[in-house]
Image (cartoon, rainbow, N blue to C red; front, side, top):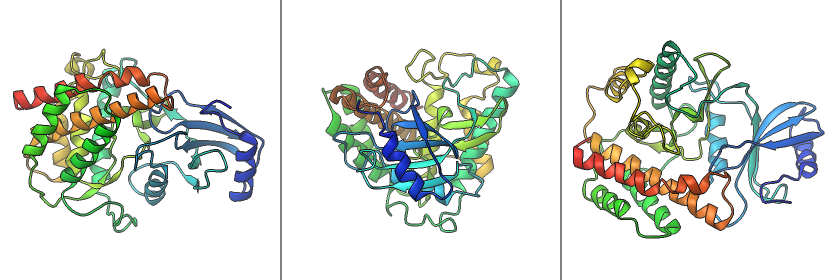
Length: 341
């Protein structure tokens, strides 16, 4: 079998004995998206599901945490943060070759371009406002009440994250990139003091990780929780705000060169202001640091994607193209620092 093929017979046998009401036969089709964890639509006699697995091959330590995804989405069931119904986590790698989980399939719309070119301004405005509300709802989750108080480590979140992603970047580094080195030096020298804010953070909060109601503006699921943890809310906010600075021609299309007002999309300043209003925050200090950190972190993530492509175990055919964004993204982060946001 090819690297990402599934042994559907073995999978069906396991699911039939592990999930009440599950019945085969089943078919599996890999979704084209998903840079990190291969994701498949599973159609069985008992219904439609989604399977998400670790990729095969040698992996970076702590990466591809499908078990954490299963844990957090299970905990959020019934909260203001919409997630699919989770069915089972399989840690036995013998079943299909790597750890995986199964969740219910949801029929909705996923959009890949932040400018939403196929929609009208009114719908764009509503969708961006709903994203903003979802981000505030996420950061207001009572982590103790949902059983996630032990989901992250104590201490300065950005200090931990800077250390983690610097190590991840070094582990997948293929050549010296000066913009990345400049960013690392800046971040190490300008780490803000810990202000004590701790909440559930998604880690990859962006348009294409959300599913909207078919033909509508309501968000029916927030997906791809691999990078979630307990951390600082401004990490998610700044990460999403990178899209206001990325050009529309980038491999991850952004809003940097479009007429946002004409499109019905708020400015970065207005988006941040609305978020702060919803969370009762007067102002955000150290915004330059948070944005610069976000550019560095995404650079490190995409360098890992590129390295997996070279090693032959990337989940997406566009992996090398995305990996080529490492240096340009880091340079955007350097520009944020030089321009003071």
